[in-house]
Length: 352
Image 1 (cartoon, rainbow, N blue to C red):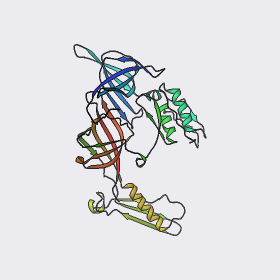
Image 2 (tube, helix red, strand yellow):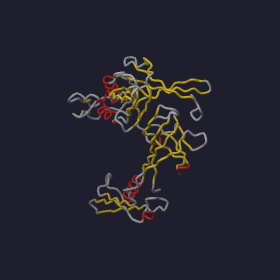
Image 3 (cartoon, helix red, strand yellow):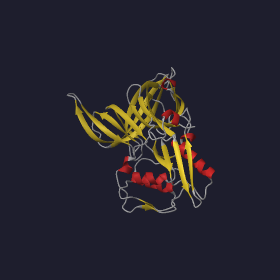
Image 4 (cartoon, rainbow, N blue to C red):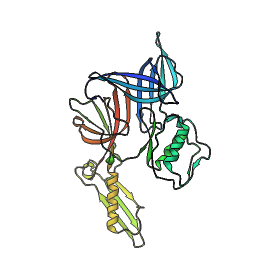
């Protein structure tokens, strides 16, 4: 593995992929440029665009980053995509075909589920998801073990594709779809940020691969600084009020100069709670509603960080110190330096 913080020579290789063996088949020598987009919010988890000077039809293409550092040559896959939808550009000398490319999950998205299809109650969720994924996609599928079973029949909607149906199905076992760079379909367990450990630290030191441009977005609008809970029972009505008066909180009453009230008239409380339990409930609600999500966008030289990974941001020049964030999207340009534009999110409690 090269030292990604030090200089190296980088080139790229492109291969067609045999859909039967999922191995590299033929090298493609006519690719002029490529951009790879990875995105957790996309149903198929990403896409790519390739500029090619020949017609390849519809085929899977695998992209590699080739590095040479201290005389050692290594090759790293960046993604495997199904190329489709060509549009040709002619500059007077040569025709270039701009091709949209999609992840192997496209094959699950292309077709609707069978009308009336359902998975019956007590079925092992991940076993049936593995089987159905293999039936409807050519990419290799990596099986995972889980004991979770369906509590009720799981019925496909008439608008469901196999991708949307199976995505919703595995969510019942707290899993998401994932892909590795070789194009294999994986099942990734859902994890909260607290349980994740950073795989990489971005900082503004001299040897950092982090570029200087850094953008942070957040939205304070609508975050309350007062929570009122009204609870009625056969005995009477009880009201609990909790206020954010922390002078160190940017959304507190002193700092905003006004109250923003969130009122609950039907609290989710079991039995006949005591007054102190209702007070605690109001505090819990204000605590949870005082959590703000920050979205951070930055660029860096390539390193083996994937979408879904946890990274540590220690960019003191931007006022971000020792923050754990989850990567939600990446755009990788296959050009000199292999620049990566990355977006990550992290949360911050604004009350206590």
